Image (cartoon, rainbow, N blue to C red; front, side):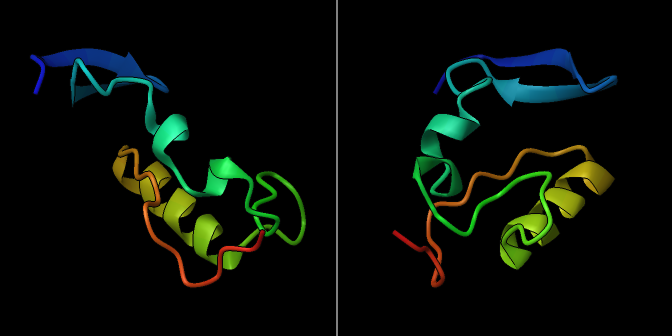
Length: 72
């Protein structure tokens, strides 16, 4: 585990582990090729859209590690 650091993310000061800062996309199952994942488009995955809205509301980052609807 790295050092806990504070930085500005989308205009809000947040805290994170220095070792994982900015790496959520490399860990997130959605970004690893799910055909349902279409960020910013009509028809985006409903699960991903709900997670994104939650992230916006609470200023958090939530990578997805498991999903029952992943589509190859």
